Each structure stands twice: as C-alpha cells, then as structure tokens.
Image (cartoon, rainbow, N blue to C red; front, side, top):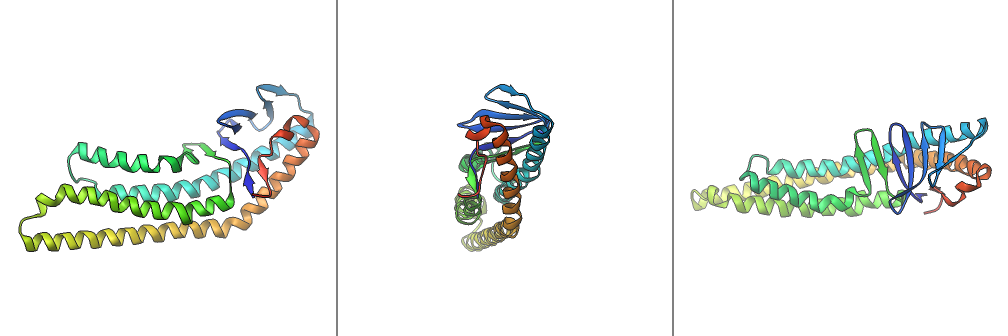
Length: 231
C-alpha cells in the first residue's frame, strides 16, 4: 500500500502535490480545488469530501510522527554528546554536520507545529526507512561526531598517559552504550510501526474506497490516486 502523491496537512486545508506543485486542495474539509479551479459540489459529494479529508487528517500525521520521532530521537542523542564541549564555533560546526547529514531524511517527512507533510512512498518504504536506512546511518553519524568531539578534547584530557588512556577507554565505552540505546529506541519505533501496520492498511483501504467514489462522481479527480493499494 502506498501514497502516490505528496500530502500536506494544515489546520485549514489539505494539499495534494506532484513534483512539489499543488494539484488538488481541500479547504475546511468541504471546498475542492483542482489545478486552481473551484469545483462545485452537491450535498453528497461534499459529505464524501469531508470523510476523505478527515480520514487523511487522522492518518497522515500519525505516520509522519513515527518517522520524525525516530529521526529526532537520534539527533537529540547525538547532540547531547557534545553539549557544553568545545567552543561555540565547534559546536555549531558539529550541529551543522548532523543537520546536513539528516536533511535528506527530513525531506520525506515533515512535522512543523500543526503542519504535516508525507512524500510519495509505500508503507514498506517507511518500514525500510526505520529498519534499514535510519538506524545504520545514525550509528555512523554518532561515531563520526564523537570522533570530532574527542579530537577537540585530546589535549585537555592528556594530563598523563595513564589518565588519558583511562579517560579515552571510558569515553568510547559510554559512546558504545549510547549507540546501543539509540539502536534499541529505533527498534521500538520500528516495532510500533509494525504493530500499527494492519490498522494503517485498514485505514488506507477506507480512504481509497472514498477516493474511488469521489473519482466516479468527479472525473477531474481520476488523475490523482493519492492512495494506492499496491506499492
């Protein structure tokens, strides 16, 4: 099951996007615009549109939040490692490294206040994002960032050879513990997604049925299969 178009959920409207351009917009769950043109609806069509819009509003934010929570969990854990360490310019450089590395992930899932964006993708792709993409890359990013932080601390920690060696071993042990905890937390997010997959599929089927009914009554919508039952 998949989303064939990008979906932006805002408090007062929903936008269906293709190549970053709005093709369909639903205002206040009851007004429909297709390619900027207002579509007149009768009472039954308005009721269907409201069901469709409210279904997306219940569903999309939950999917986006699972993915965004996973990313933010990793970022906060990594940034906590260098909090209070080094100069302000060094901290800014490390944070820039973290944000630059994760920017490509966040373009697929956006949560900002009451706005949610989901890029075209399937539930299988979301599962792979949490299992096969996010966790190993955050692991690598954590170790790269720690390497930069540790390099900045070497001179300060080298009071003696023995103290330095002991501090270095303790530091990398704590990093390993942090990475293990991060991995476990991301596994929990993946399990949460897996547990909700059946519910998500059911909701997508319900939305897809309403979408089909709208398309039968409004041929202009037939070009926009937002919900697809096959990936």
